[in-house]
Length: 62
Image (cartoon, rainbow, N blue to C red; front, side, top):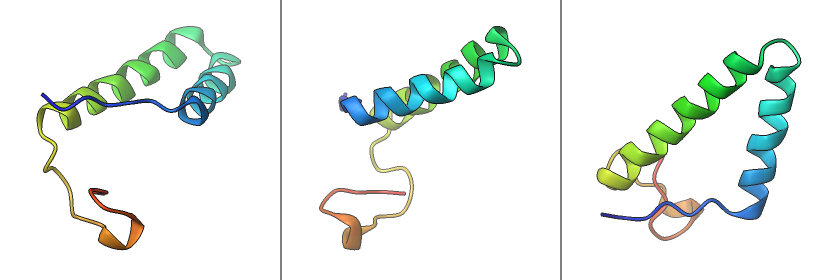
């Protein structure tokens, strides 16, 4: 299975997003991050999902 690597900037962005949503509801913030994690797991299991975006870099898909 392909590994998904969350770079420090991505982790910081997710933490910021979580904080923004958590101002309204920590439960919703947790649920949103869970959805992101599930989508990343789906990508790891199916690395050919999406459309190839060679102009963004080798192996980049959208």
